[in-house]
Amino acid sequence: MVGVPIMRRRALLLFVLALPLGGCALLDLQRPRVELVDIGLENVGLLESSLAITLRVENPNAFRLPIDRGVYTIFLAGDRIGSGSTRTPLDVPAHATRTEQIVVQLDNLRLLSRLRDLMAEQRVDYRLEADHYIGGFGSRAFHSVAQGALQLHDGALRSR
Image 1 (spheres, rainbow, N blue to C red):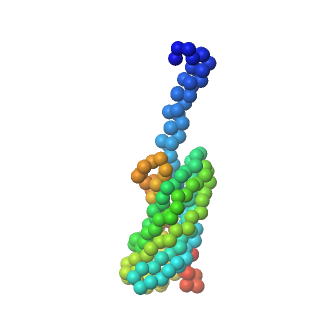
Image 2: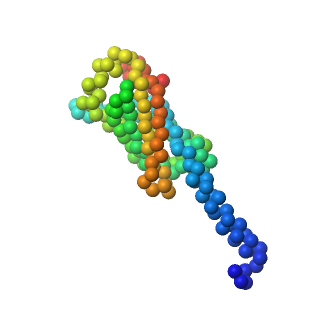
Image 3: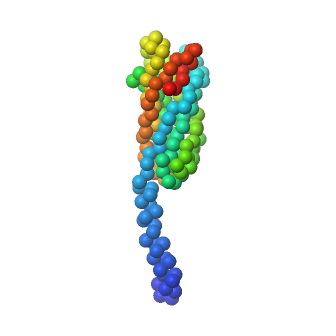
């Protein structure tokens, strides 16, 4: 550091000391929260059907979350009925929410065995499990869960 003015040395020292502090915010990453907003039938086939699910992803952090990929699994009445993922990355601003629509592929054979019971009840509990892969964290998934009930109204499922 010979030949570097004392003011520059102090500024450089402060910068070097501040680097680890900035990284601490990333170490205290709060997992994104997910909420089921809407659900609708996308496609019906003999062996496989699909649902269009609208999700709200909330970022509780003071910095933006660059979600590279989201993988979602839906359960009805405790049974896993299907899964899906985001098609494109999702960028959620700090302390904000983003709405995303995904297509969930259903296993008709698994669902068919439970359909009569589900339809008779007019209300079914759901659980949505989300794994968000956030840029800069490699292959580590941040897991979150949303739960609630779906009502059957006029032949359509609605979140409640």
